[in-house]
Length: 189
Image 1 (cartoon, rainbow, N blue to C red):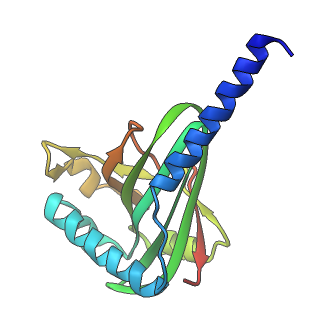
Image 2: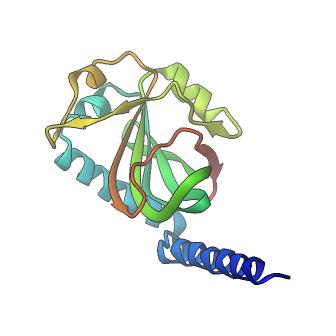
């Protein structure tokens, strides 16, 4: 083995350990009382969303259901992924719990945490989500983007899209957060 190969292997090993450390540092485990913990985090997340982005109350009022993912943890070093747990609310009541996973590849390094809410704007979209064994977010989801800090763009709140996603509360070292390609699976906490 040459010296350059040994250095490359050592560097790869150290970077791999760093990725494991990033994922460990971004703990989003439930630590017991699964359903109660998810519901408490969901309530807190929705309060924060409505106070920071008042335009989302219009989405809430027009939607037939909302999937709230209070804490998504994303980390990567070339190969990355994200994970979180949340609650599906219909009529303001939790009806199911879901986990969310995503894998990513490419030029990336770092870790971040964020929250997101999927607003189901039609009964058909909500039914499709609930009856799927593993629903994947695709390119057909419209993202609500804030403009001037606290307001959502008018196009988003009047959109006819069947699913509208609001991603917020990003904190960490990876720029941007997207839910495209995220898979949601019903769980029993």
